[in-house]
Length: 255
Image (cartoon, rainbow, N blue to C red; front, side):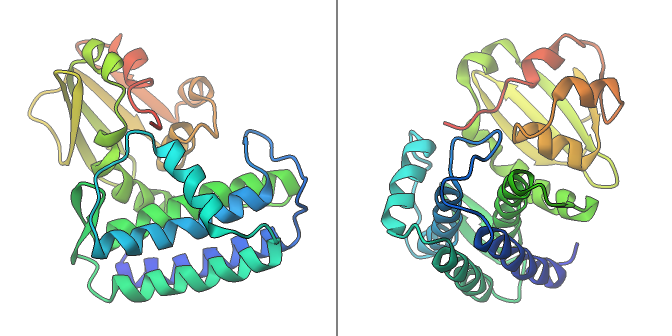
């Protein structure tokens, strides 16, 4: 997806999530989430503000992202769903403007140099997945397109090294080749309790993974069953060390 198209999708999806917030109720249960609709709205509003703040003042990845999320949700200071919807649409518009027209422009993202397009893709992922949560609670359709999933993974994968579980990484040492169907190849090197991710096909891999982009995204975010995706062929793993599949599935976590 071109950056110009991705910007339009970001704006459209922010409005669609805003519409879901407006018809939700404050005390509504959201299946699979610990957050209520107002908390989801506050979290989503906090994110473009965070990303724009980091453009001016780069900051390291926090020891606990969960704790930072909770603090920034409280800082939004609003629980009215209509107001949160308005704020989300306005703040995403501001983020798109700040990111600019050059998608390849370097942009600070926590402790790394990302690009404007990649930061936009990360924000899109948040809108898509939390929009899915709200839609499921409301029993409304919410379709995530293949190109959207590929774009989100393009922003997320270079940054997932921050969310590696070191204990799992020591057991998961190896070279992984991740093939996102209809998308890109990725090389994930796991060494010494850490992981690095680069676009491209490795010369040699201990494990090859072929994944449907939407299945990989939903499994990675805990919105779909890993075993169902494996059994239906939406995710496949093979190679010299096939038992690494079990470790890889537990490698990344929210800290």
